[in-house]
Image (cartoon, rainbow, N blue to C red; front, side, top):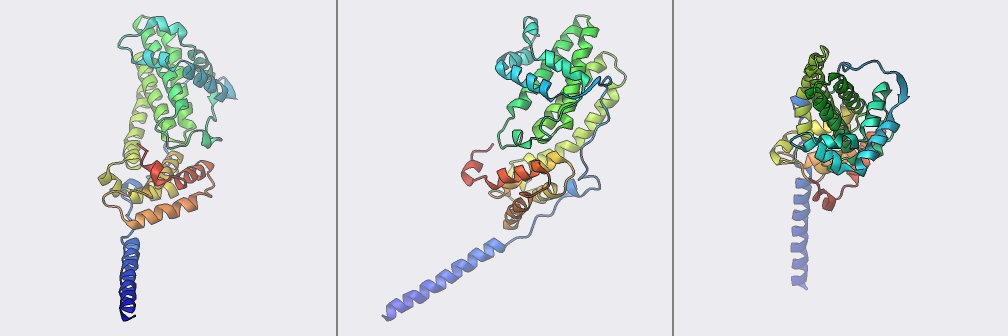
Length: 314
């Protein structure tokens, strides 16, 4: 009887010590402070660009149906477009087969494209690629390559509309950006197309290219902090992710940082603390009711991210 009582006492003491250790671990550490990346005076401002060197739009109708045509055509024969843009020499015999160039040229006369602005569920996910964005990017790159082909063959008047159409598509992706996929594709197409226009002697192209370079100088460190899986870099920017998700005025940064909070539930990097993990979970609960439906949807996906699914992410 006495032995059993002693055993229960010992077991109780061990349980108390164990629970105390768990509480200590759970409450240990303080929140990582944000760095200069997100505390600088303009760090939370939205990304912006001057107007690109495009002709005045002739139609104010939404170009989204034309962009959907581009997506449908490219996805039906994606291998053709991938081969065309990556071939060492221009496969000129394939140019007549590039049917996506027809709606691509048509959207040049339209000033807007809401695309994903009102349907964020169509673009936000943990998937490594957005097939729809990739399709538009391929179409724009194909147009740029055909334009370069025409320029090399002494046909600048045939080249210019294609460069302008690719520039216009890139600008529409930039304006309707919800995730980094649209932002990156839009900037890439605008850079390629504006470089082509510069080759044709367009005086408005060089200053626009300089503006693109300035924007990229700001975007690159922010996106590195958001997207990194390196444990050292990750641990340095937990506070920045919290701040961007909650307070940034750039929608892409808010959406992508909110998705990142889902990852932070399981990994806060080398210098991260349990407090960072708790804060990630707390913020996700708060962001589930965010006024921006894109952020709220990203918070839902992040909240539903399981440890098993997290381990499959790249």
